[in-house]
Length: 460
Image (tube, rainbow, N blue to C red; front, side):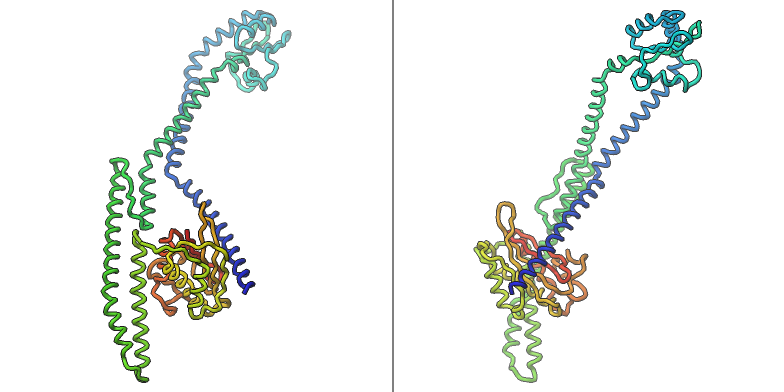
């Protein structure tokens, strides 16, 4: 018995590790997809891209404008000014006068000729002022910054490194900061503009879970506000329909109980003759099935109510599970892996008994031809600062398809294949188990164990 429990625990540990790994991976992938599909992000990116395109078009147009019309208009003045500087340097060029001009003006001078070869900025292309020097042989034509002298020299002008040091950097950084501020303001405005869509999405998720108590807030009196109001009206209508359905089921269940009890009593009072024994047993079996169905319907409607009342008391879950296993026929070979020494848990004893019994009954039903019997585990878990409990029931049957796992806890849902109508039940057992777990502040999780099915109930 000990090695069986350890084997069951090892399988459970491996399954939990794989499940947690897949959950983290899916959460990461879904987070990336949500970020890519975010309307806010796409609108802000479109705003930034539009701003960059407009800036590029503006800068290109201004550059083209200055390089054509304005350049042609300013060229005569620049040529005349360059000729005056060449005249001041003298013929042949006087290096001392050129040095004086470089010291006085934010320019560089390069003299090339048969007698004088001098450069005030010998760094060339590696220095901020050498860019004109390297372009003089690339571009043809009369350039205003290349002026000839009467004795065959050429004087080439360029920008001084001091010009770049004296450039207004504060204005550049201020412009960049202003652009970033515009982007942030655009993002804030888009976020505020799309906030009603986020409210509508969160409200639709709540309504999909059956939580109709909190309506979608109406933030603005526009199309989105009108949409939110219409969705709230739809949610109220759905809530009214669900309440009417619940009231009808409760009324029918109560009304059917009395005639069903009388019919069962009359069937039990029938004479037990050999000729009618088979018919009598079949009638009692059908009546018992109808009684169980009505009881499950009543219990499910009570648990589905938002004001469900639990009769909580301290319960030793390990002792309770052993009692249930000992009472159930065919459960003598079930593997038990129950943590010892757990403190009593405040639960509704009758409903936890119903939960464990339903889960174990399902596991036994679908393990008829399995190579191994079911396994029931109990372990302690930490839920924040408080200690909770986790009950797991694992069978080694055929399992179910992955796309059907989420629907197993729906009322009256039954899968095809191995878990068919021939196995009995009407599809309320797993639904009741989920309602009991949620009524205790917990959660019921269903996943394939390959082979079989693993059902984990966490109690807060």
